[in-house]
Image (cartoon, rainbow, N blue to C red; front, top):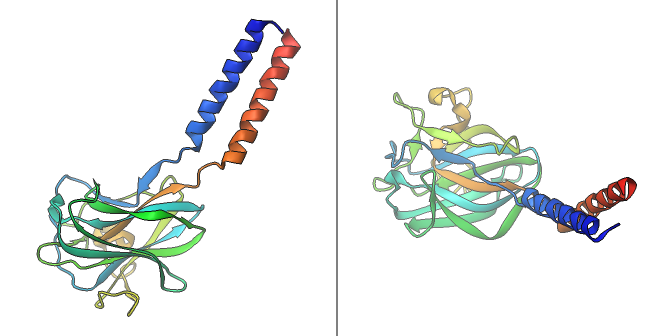
Length: 228
């Protein structure tokens, strides 16, 4: 092949590499959010509030979030747990206070020290510590509550909401659930603005990325050789 043919092939392979690297960079989703700007909470619940979900395809969880009443910072301290529903044990926990943690969808997110990998299974995101100064949101009211959810394009599914009087779900797991009990404005599986989490699909491993890049370059090289 000529110098220019080699150059075109090199540039094409580089373009494939950039495209694959972009595809491998996972998009992060907020599991729950609240629409409408700085929305005030509508309930003071002293126990624990949770939202159950299933993981359909392995994900990474990078941060846990707490609902920020009025989006003006958390006056007290809200505890958030990510719990395995099968064992009722905590996989991650964060205590969120003040306004230093980033705000997204009216939840303040505290990053985990390292991303947590969740395989297919059932889990719950549970929060407690709400008060008159830091109210939670509850959609099981006459006016409802503007809770939004994201499945990450089907990576997860929402199952139920739960609540219990004990603010420590590891001491007494919140066993009361909302599906089949409360309407929650038609979203009984997502009744509460309390805890949330940020998640993403597992990114393409570097080895697979290199393999695909190599195969793409080899295919292009064969094509250029065939037409030369």
